[in-house]
Each structure stands twice: as C-alpha cells, then as structure tokens.
Length: 532
Image (cartoon, rainbow, N blue to C red):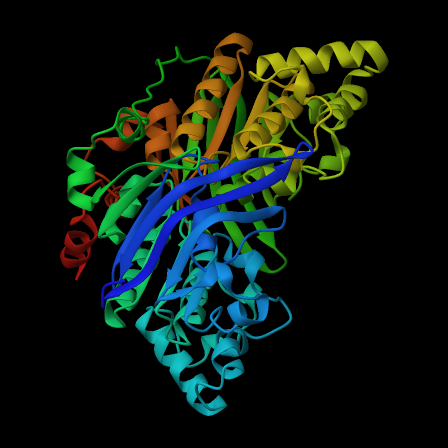
C-alpha cells in the first residue's frame, strides 16, 4: 500500500445463504481509498453496495461470508482477524452511519451518552473531555442548542437532527474511515441540505476518509471525490466525480443517469372525490394542522409536499380517521365522512386505503404473501379458499409479480418487491382512493421508476385517485396532476403542477425548490454561498 492509502480491497468475494444454497453477492471487487478521500458507491437494490460497505469494516451480515480477497486497512487484512481483534477497530478507527437513525439509537439513553460511548469505551478521553467534545461536534454539525441538545432522548429530536447526532457519534472517536450508508434517504430536501452540509464539513475538517453509499446521484455528486458503480455484485465502472457525471462510459451507468425521465400524461379534471374543509387537528394540546383545505379530483394524483413536520402525514391520518380533526369537515363523494375510523362503515373504510413508506414495518414478517394479500380480501369482500387464491394470483399479476411469490415471507423479498406487495394489499380492498405516504423514498432510482410506472398504469386501468405524500420534488414533477405545498401545518400553495412550479413562488415554495440537489458537484457549495 502507498503511504497515503488507507483502505485497499483486493478481489473481494462474498456469498450469502438463501433458498438452501450459497449465492455470490460480491464478485471480486477492488477498492483503493486514500486518507481524506470520499468514495461514492452507487447502484440499484441488490447491487452489493451495503455488503461492500460493511465489508470495508471487516464485517459481514448474518448469513453472509467472505470467500476470497483481502481487506487491507492501514496495512492490516481485516478479513484475517478474529472477531475480538476486529472489534478493536469498530467504533474506534472505523465507524458507521446507518440509513435509519431512529432505529439505531437506544430510546432509553440520552443522546450525549450514546455519542460518547465508543470514545469512553476505548479510553480516548475522560468523560468530561468526551462530553465537551460531543457538544463541540453538535455545534460543528449546526444542531440547535448544542450545549443542551445531548440531554434529550432520541424521540425528542427530529429525524434530521438525529441523523446529525449519529454523525457526531461516528466522529467522536476521530476515526480514520466512516461508512455512510444511505444517511439522507428518508429526509426531506431542506433537511437533507443541512445534513449533507454538516457531514461534508466535518469530513473535510478532520480529513476523514469515507465511503458514501447511496442511490441518489445528485447527493453523491456533493460528497464524493470519485464514484464506483456496482451491479449484481460487480464493478461496472469507476471515475472521478465530474467525469462520471458528464461522461459515463457504460450503458448501465447512463441508464442510471437518465432513469427519472418519467412524465405523466395530463388527466382531464373530474369532480372532486374528496374534500377536506377548514381542518384543524392536534396531538394532545399541540395544534398541528391549521385551517387546511384540500380538494382531490377523481382519477387524479394530488401530490402533497413539504419538509418534515409540515403536516403531510398528519393530513393523511385525518383523512383515514386515525386522527379525528378538532375542527372542519371531510367529504367523500359529496357525503360527510365520519371523523373517527370506528364510526365509519366497512364500505367507507374499504374505499380509502393507504400504502406506507416503510414496507418492512408495514407487513407482518411472519405472514406469507398469501396471508398479507388474503386478509383484506376476506375482511372486505368475504373471499376465502379457491376464490381468494384466484384473486391473489390476479393481484400478483397486476403488480407484475407471479405465483412463485405467493408463499414467500417479506424477508425473502427485495425492497421493490415488498412495496409491490403493499400495493397489492391496498388494491385487494378494491378502493377508489389510495394515500401513498412516501412510498418510493427508501427505494433506489431504478426501483422507484418501476413502482411509479406501476402506480400510473393501475391508476389509468382502475380510475384510481392518489394523494401522494412525498418530499421528492422530482417524483412530484413526474407523477402529479396537482400539487399542495404545506409548511408548519398550513397550506402554503396549491394548484396544477404547472402553476405551482412556475415562478413567481411564495417564499417557502422557493426554499423547497431551491433545495432539490442537482447533478453538479458545485451545487451545494453554490447554494450555501447564495444563502449565506
């Protein structure tokens, strides 16, 4: 290894066990990463990105094994070390920032105690020094009230703040290498800008090397010095970031760059199927929706956009009856809709269905696809036995899967397949109106496009109406007919897609639109300079 090379992976091969046999996951990949460099690692689901990122730590997930190659970290082959020896590196010289900060923190411990745990375990600082350093890192990461935010528990801060606290946790022991695994995927665009800025600043400040795993090309352009593209566990190509963005060599890489050229045909406007009028809603004593009015034409897609805490998902909860409003009315096909779910008839419940953001948590991991789709068939339509079986197979065909999936568990499905099963479960009730709550935000761009095309086809065939909650402005441009912009529980702007996206914009809409990353390595720098 050259003097400034920190990580050198040579001919790495990894296998995973499924369907009662071993499969190749990573097939002879090489990586060279120098101190202070950031490598972007991209590719669709199943490409082996996270497996390779974890392998850079000498770690493999349960059911996986390293079958060949070397992982040289500062000259030491991590693949040859015992578990105990590797643990001397983890949380010390190599740290990891996960996609879901909320799932990665212990809810019973204060943030500052978790931030300093590794530093104290390895004896790098005294407790007082580690605590002071954590507060300084919170300040570096632009967290509010850096001297006191560490005294809070994970549920007492926002998702974007928790992601930054996790970055502080990763930086606390001053590692040589950080693995960022999709750290901004579930964040809204304005929060994403803050988190990206903070992560880039701290990596540069401490000259830390990093592997940044993502499916978002515009995001990786802001972070990486060079980009490696993976597919099916093999390297497709690698190049310096600017060259990769402007002149990718391989057809597969070019397909990644152009994948979001999706455009929905305009729908002729029909009568509203749903109206919410002057809605107020609260969680306990905290008012979260203020005089919200939204009208949704039948057969259309109305996108609701806004940052975290804007009231998007709360509006969905009001529509579904999970959160009765404190004021205002809901009309469905011109008739009043009872505010409480338990007061609605079975038919009213059937006609409004919801598809959730995280398919992993939206399905029972112990139920097969047959049981997941079959339950609404029995509950709403009374279908059992052969009639249910026939309908399940029809629904699988509708979502472009086949009968081979009927007895699989969620853990045996890819992310995109899980989301398709959630769509089939919603369709099983034969609804008119479906609320899609961030249904593509955790998926890579190729899988996203497949899900969006599927939803658009089903809408056309079944005359479905969608309320599409998202923070992804490119998705809104692709699939919406109308757009509702929300901020702090209020509707800022609503109208046709062309009207909302055409200037002049209200101040908040302008903030949202300007926060959408572009495939330009200078975009984040220029944005922060313009806002300074």
